[in-house]
Image 1 (tube, rainbow, N blue to C red):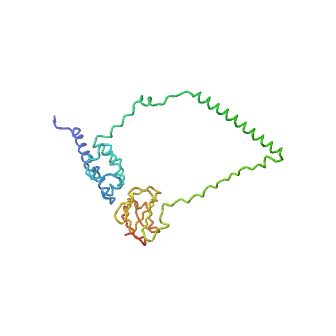
Image 2: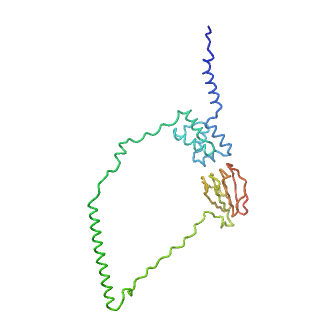
Image 3: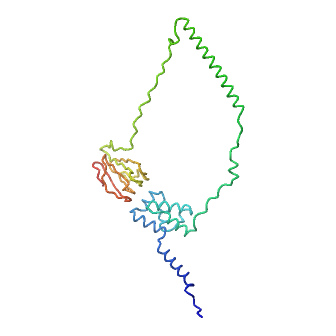
Length: 282
């Protein structure tokens, strides 16, 4: 009789080793986010400006340190935000975070039913006193109107007796005011009247949304945000405008009154500088 382990007894241990090898082959959450950011040509500063997540938190998450996030819920929110900024699907990363940190957070308990019942307004019956007062006011108003009409008829009869007709009495002419002509809507574009002594750059999101950052010639931030499809922004400076386009393929550019012909690819990050004169990229 053999006292060694049977092949069936060794299979669970082999399955565990295969699962461990598979876990080791999968990159960590921070590593996956870092690789996607580098592949997109973005720096940590770019990601921080685009997502409003502080740079120290971005560095910590890329190092798989989630303590700086301030809690499990905030960590999940930062992972989702950073994944979208580097064009990753956040769902697998969130599932991986749940496997490594104890699953989904507990749902917030609903408010007790008796509290909702306590704040529900009470039903009230009809206010008969107010209804009677309104009826009396209506009757008085009708009587007064009838007496006023009778006075007007007596005056008309007196005018007829004196040889004049009721229609001869002068009546004020009501002048109808013509509606003011609607003012033309001010265009968001400054391209039509681009001054020669300045540089004017218009950015239009025509094929999707894109993160945009614009700085003046001193390096001061003019705009930092996301343009949704159909949005337009115009920037103007005395000598120079610096641009960073998060998704250059979705953008149309107009510089100093002329449209820029480009071959930007979807998802490409472009850093551009424009000056006065011909619309050439610096």
